Amino acid sequence: MAQICIRKALLEDAEEISNIWTVICAERKYSAVSRPFTPKQEREYIISLSAINPLIILRNSYELLTMNLNIFSCIRELCRTKKLRMT
Image (tube, rainbow, N blue to C red; front, side, top):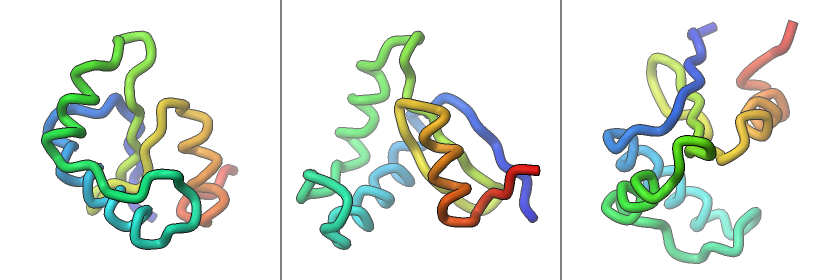
């Protein structure tokens, strides 16, 4: 299993975060968002967040797995989708 990295989102992550929004919006299942955010919008959003409440991302060596403002939601989602197993 690839190593998982949990960290604050950086401006360089905006492209991958935008790609996740594209998938979420295409599924039309779990979000009120109907149009994906552009990388520029994501960069602006990341900049606007405070240091106390940053956007958290989880990634492995290959891809961004999930993002959330709540680290525990990120971990729970990975466990739910079986991309992470807690031992």
